[in-house]
Image 1 (tube, rainbow, N blue to C red):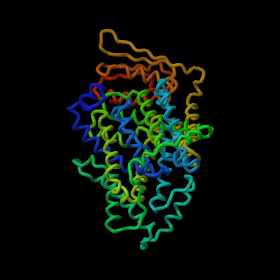
Image 2: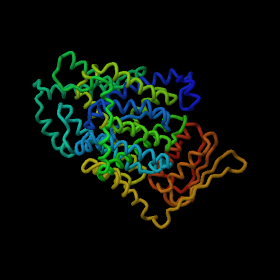
Image 3: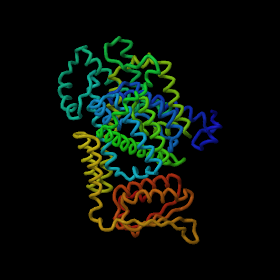
Image 4: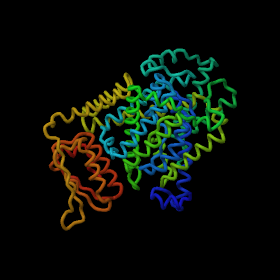
Length: 514
């Protein structure tokens, strides 16, 4: 199908004049995605080709159907922990059927237009969850740097770190010390390149250079370290679920796992889509369409025994920064992964496991965003910071679902002083004798009314001045304040004149200057 044909079918697809930019961006995303697909698979306790299969489906299928044209889907660090624990407890053979069910849940949720529901999750909960996942990835992949397997829980991995460090013999050439040297080489090259790279080479990903450096060192010196294992043929990577495997879904525990995967994958996807929308001024995300596309993708990933997928912010931001104009870039990146796996599997077998461990250590560390909790405390006070911290600690010490559910429960505490009247009224009108659109909020602006608020704000024309009237808002929780703040920043980047009025206590956390 030509670019012109795709263009006519979907305005998110490249026209001939944007084809070159999409082609270039797709190569950049491919180079970013390759080491991450394999590294996340290994962090999830599954063979690396399973991550590559998810990346291929995320590009070829979800890229074509997505409601966020510039978002890139694939295996995500945010699900690595829950998949690792699931595979350890139930086995890899059961992951496929559970993932098919999770995908169907997402598809149904998108069909019934529940995409907006995931957008009301407290930013403190989401970022606390991601920080906890990042910490678990770092302390788990620390052991991979030594050519060792991660242990069964985050606390066990953490407890073993001192023994690993004290056991290092700098003058030894044991496999563990050699692997550690390769992992550290990957980390140094990755971070050093991203700090020192020339501006004209800013699109060359540090993760790729780190893996290439470690691979060349291991190959040229003939080092005896663990390397990744990939199948001889592409067809064996796409192994399908056996018919009897679906009978396992009768187990109630597996149904709960499917719900958890669907919830976390959907939340991470729509969080990423919202972040991608903030990076460009083009087509906004259709959240229900995106949720349906992710559901279809996860059904296929489950059918081929691959990893679950989400929209991924690292690859998506690389896509936007590389100049992608349409969804064709995401689709083509899946084509490049497919071609690489089909034609060059021998090259993947030279990559040291410790190199991918190094990539995941850096990736996990970046998920632990202390800056975000500082922002929450400074802008919104103690409670959101406490929600972040409690979610983070529980994800690390118990499990991901417990941390998220407790965080969501704590989000309700903000509403307790106003529990008797949480109604929010939203009205939109045209100001007489001007071109200004007035959006007025009355009552309690909380996450309970955020779906309606998002709809109202997104319907405001981008080319007209706006008056956001908060004079009659009685209280505003941090979830709503963050949403309005992001909307204000996006409109002002476009050059739209936005005036905000309201009580000082309501305006304080908002980015009014601008």
